[in-house]
Length: 328
Image (cartoon, helix red, strand yellow):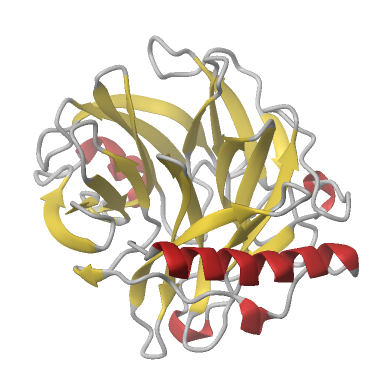
């Protein structure tokens, strides 16, 4: 998503005033009408559960939920083209969790140590028999990915759901993974940087909801300005224009929490500050992913059109005078 310097300045000022007003008047959420529309995205615009990485030689690689995991490329973060599947020949190792369905969910893609690393999940809708796998590639190209095996799994009796992974590498070099959907909420495990697999058996709880449906998922941690920001999605995905997905955030000075919202409510007690929700013809913006692109903090997500089509959403993030993020 490219923006002119003037437009970027005007959006920053306008949205910043909204964010400051919310803080001054003690409002958790600004009026949804003030939320920005997605930035301009052209070409192949379908996406569900997207994550994106900047390539070392320039341009961008995006992965999303699809049979064999879908890939897209872009030279400018605006125009996107289909780039095939990570696993065009199938993923029999995941059949235990998908019941033979070829769809793999919520890939998390990054570039570390001279290679692309992708964590992805295998499950079926509404079930907690799930597995998170790791794959690597030197190029990121379709068909070049090698499955590196299971990282964490959940069963019908686990009380949590092992989907929606996100790799977090802290500024001090520690590797962590967040994951989780519904049930008892968002979890975190420590990883070994050498293998990308579990470093120990501890599973930490970092966010949970206590509504009837316990709808929280899609965690993503972004380190910025001395804080770790935990982005999550609340409410219902995957219902087209009836989706109520919304993007929430909390923050902590420690990677393992506690994460709190703007009002000081712990995310383990149901807290979360809304930064993006349905507005106008944008329905259910959620499954957030955030990455640094130069001085920009880029928010990537999916949303639905009035016709129920899933689309790629990209906005920039700003941080107000109290260091809380907002989309513009």
